[in-house]
Length: 624
Image (tube, rainbow, N blue to C red; front, side):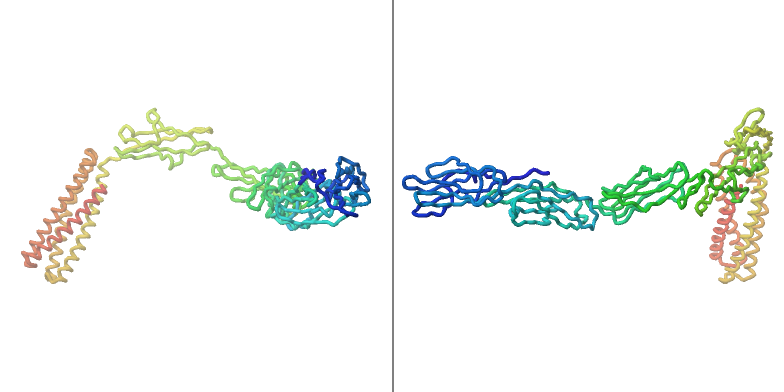
């Protein structure tokens, strides 16, 4: 309750000055009487002073008196005035209060109106609960024990907005009033202050008294729809599951309080707000089987419960919410299945434990076994699965491809004595030569000392397996002979290309009428004869040369071999040019063509033959 606020003062109205008053009614001559104040304002039970005065009277024999139903006590006075004190004014309408004077046989009177007031004992607003949006709520302000009502004004406001102003008619004595206003509630009203202001105005004769009620702050909420609860219908005892409660369109979201209970026990929740959506999450971990009630309650100021969603917990594998399980001391039977990695059913039965004996094989190592439990709960079948990996242990073995018994290496190359063994656990492989352990992973240079018999040993927790392996060398000359045969093959391919080129030249010569068909045939036969002679005399020399080059390359290095390849290409170009010139001269001698045409033909033949010769030579060197 806020304290009263008093505006104005009564002190200036109660002055005893004789120079103010209202003229009375004079009877005879100029003798008059005045009373002041013309309107006296006094609180109920309070005191007031009335001042009476008169004009001069011959002989100064004038008298003054105060006629009133109230107790009046003469106060200070003078030759022309007299004050009267009216204590404990307890009449609401003490009129008339009259000053009367007599001068000889002349009488005169003057009256003062008296207003008796009482300040409100209490100005208060009815408490306002939290209001839903769209609701119409009456705001009521009470003003208790106030008078006079005709001077009272009551104003209801929401913030700075005036909702209603009420005035009242006159009444006898003090009275209590109530002022109401029907307030349609909107979201914008949230946080607004409602005030009630009572004014008792005694103006112009007295002050303005004002008193206000303690403001009421409106709390507005909006829950347009009930919370939406999401939870699994089946729970497993002592297994965590999540429940989520959504509330959309709530207002104000900062004041929303959501609680989740399971079987009447509150759960720890985490609430997240996004826009007008509030999401609350809780963890469910029932400790006993049976029917449990899950409830989500959203509250601003008045609760609004969601439709109960009854999850339930039961013994393994799962529980159901649709109906009670009945006597939980005898759980329903569980059907078990044992499956292999390909989904084939190996064993099944409706008993609490299922066993299967299997013969372990090496191929079964790493295989998956699956155990599935099924339970009929509330008309629905629920399942739970567990998997296990099958591990088969076996001693070491040397597979033929992992560790072959014979090896043939080329002297001067880099080779590693690799040997792989299988087993579970994975075995450790060690190889020895002449009593010394050798590396089996990193390659090293092949020398005569590495030839011989090696012993390899594989060991794991289940045992040890040994094997012997032989290492021999291949002679380089054998490789050279193989290369020579390959070169002969390539030479034969070059001869075929020469025959095709001869046929092409004959066709071109005849087409351009450079020679007759007979001469063209002679030219082609000459080219083939020269090519065959080159093949006959050069093949053996070339094979011998390639063997020599191979030996030189092995001893002198890559740089000399590269230089020799360049030299060989130059020789091929010179030989091709010489053969082409011989053919051209033969053609001039036989008068097959002119000298100019012969020179052009020789140059073209030399270029073509050199190109073919170089290509063949490069292929031969690469093969070597």
